[in-house]
Image (cartoon, rainbow, N blue to C red; front, side, top):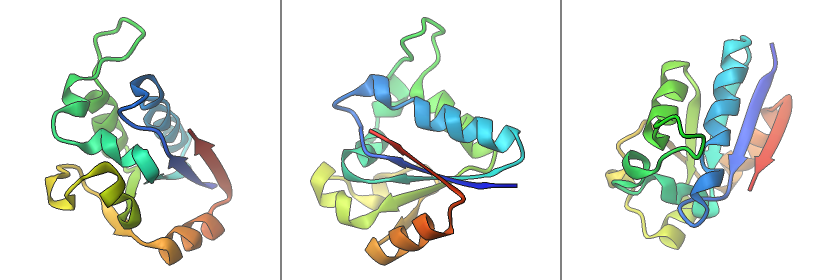
Length: 122
């Protein structure tokens, strides 16, 4: 079993790029691998209240970003949020309704070092 760590750096400024990370991490879990996502830079902005609930996938399925997030949660994908990026997106960690472990720079590097596979999505 491999440990995948995905790094998501894009957010509400490019909503079409917000879905892939959840899909990929969920597939990793379905293949019995560990999967974690680190949200940093503007990637954290997808957790602003209302964004995930109102952002639709471009495939015409009618699925919202929130549906992808729920599926990843149900598959035990771990979410990490970079505390240093919170001011960048003007986000209060208390406003995030999804389970998120808040990490700093040292934790970020430890997660990268512990990964068998690192996937950077921007």
